[in-house]
Length: 121
Image (cartoon, rainbow, N blue to C red; front, side, top):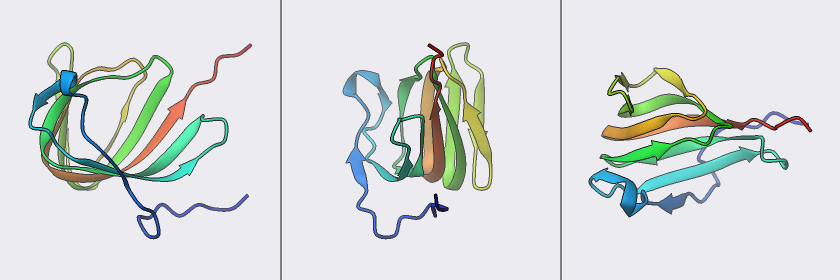
């Protein structure tokens, strides 16, 4: 076991765009630098960046995400309309089962950690 440095160095980013059926505004290009992923798929970490835009999100009932904004600004809006905005140095957890909108207000870069709960057998 060794410590894993979360960095963009020496990693080719994955690129994608939101599902067109989920788009609310724009068609932002997203980059993901997946730095760490356990072989059992329980935990993944890396860096993610995105252009401005907005789309609907629906987290699986067993998937949680911690993120910390490096640069830029994002706003998460839940189904009830409650909005939380995050900028550089701020962090949050998107809980399992969250449904709402992810809005990139200013081009953003963030660290992320995704944890997938494993059901007991």
